[in-house]
Image (cartoon, rainbow, N blue to C red):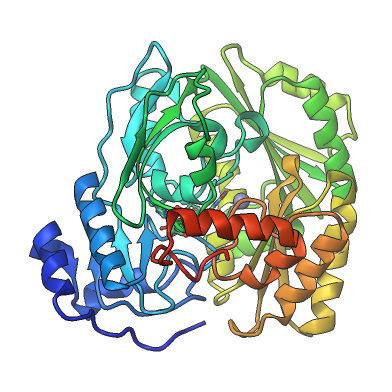
Amino acid sequence: MSSPAAAALPGGLAQVLGAIVGPRHLVVEPDLRAGHEVDWTGRFRGATPAVVRPGSTAEVAAVVAACDAAGVAVVPQGGNTGLVGGSVPLHGEVVLSLRRLDQLGPVDEVASQVTVGAGVTLAALQRHAAAAGLAYPVDLAARDTATVGGTIATNAGGVHVLRWGPTRRQVVGVEAVTADGRVLSHLSGLTKDNTGYDLPGLLCGSEGTLAVITAARLALVPAPAHTVVALCAFASVAEAVSATASLRRHLDALDAAELVLGDGMALVRAVSGRPAPFPNDHPVYVLYEASGRADPTDALAEALHAGPAPLDVAVATDAARRAALWAYREEHTSAIATLGPPHKLDVTVPLGALARFVEEVPRVVERVAPGAACWLFGHVGDGNVHVNVTGVDPDDDSVDDAVLGLVVASGGSISAEHGIGTAKRRWLVRQRSAAELDVFRAVKRALDPNGTLNPHVLL
Ligand code: FAD
Ligand code: MLT
Ligand code: ZN
């Protein structure tokens, strides 16, 4: 989906912004702006008059206030790995890149917490926590690029939600800038603090529409001494769901349960050249990960016996073999991207409806887009399926309409973890009541009365 070229900045604003961040960090050259104007999938492409790269919270506040006063809309951007078209300037907005806010505060080992800048990547945060014997449990394949600010703004899920919850569960304090340049800072991280509205909770999942996140206080968890990964093959999605439910009942240490289908496995192998995990192909695979202070390998094997028996199992305990098994699952996003910009529909359905939903989706897609290809994978432990459709024009959203209609009819959610962005805005009314949307708009007006922050996202 592309949009017209961006207008130039109104008179004087470029000088004001350049004076705030320094001329080097006001990026106006077309080739340097280019990577900030298109999303990771290539489906959403816009144009901006400038990318502004502040280096401190005070600079963020001054930039946002100047844009607000000049009536210029702003798109906050972290790693630009978002998958719903919310991080790019589709309507000529200024791009506010937060990547320079990459300070890593000292790990507070007493509280198991850390304060970091919004531009810190997940991978840098994970390494920082590991050096103190702790772990940041939010993890996803874009870890080297996705930032703390972006993961908070989207309330990112990832592969460990089953055990540790989404980003919202880890955020115990936040510093953020409102559209008029006020700084809200509440970073004490107190476990008990009943002093009014929960601003971190409100900003988690707000997709850059309410305030610009500049720093966060995050809860850390113990780093596991042992981790085991098992790739299990099943005859059907129904068996995979039932085996996963059984494992959740029998195993305390289950971190991840990730669904892969036979055609996705074949695509990943074709793109990457990886060998087959088993002598025979299977229709369905689930990758399980368990970890803990004690080695969970035997407990995982025993727990697997309690449910439907897998057709094949590959187990890995050392880091290299674990990574090799994870690659079959994590490389889905990049393998699908080789087929052209996909329509990405990140949805949840109740676990009891999941197997039927997975069967139904290709039929629904075939009806509205004959010949299109469907790629399904996801986080089976929390009912989150990633429906990817390739071979459909980026602007043709009949496929999105059909699949999201099926999701709503199945009692699910049109966004499990990627957010609404611009991609799913038109379907939000099917998911949220008029009363809820009124309250959403009132909150937006209270924090951003001029509609400066991501005005085309979410609402
Ligand atoms: P961006 O893409 O830059 O921005 C995302 C949204 O947040 C935009 O609306 C933007 O305006 C807003 N925003 C960014 N920074 C700020 C800030 N500091 N203050 C206010 N608003 C801000 N997501 C999952 O949930 N689970 C996954 O498993 C997962 N896996 C992925 C794998 C791959 C290969 C890729 C490419 C993406 C994946 N994603 C996943 C999606 C994406 O990585 C996450 O949504 C991530 O949280 C985005 O972080 P970012 O820094 O790239 O944000
Ligand atoms: C994943 O789980 O791999 C992601 O959410 C990315 C995607 O949906 O492609
Ligand atoms: Zn996901």
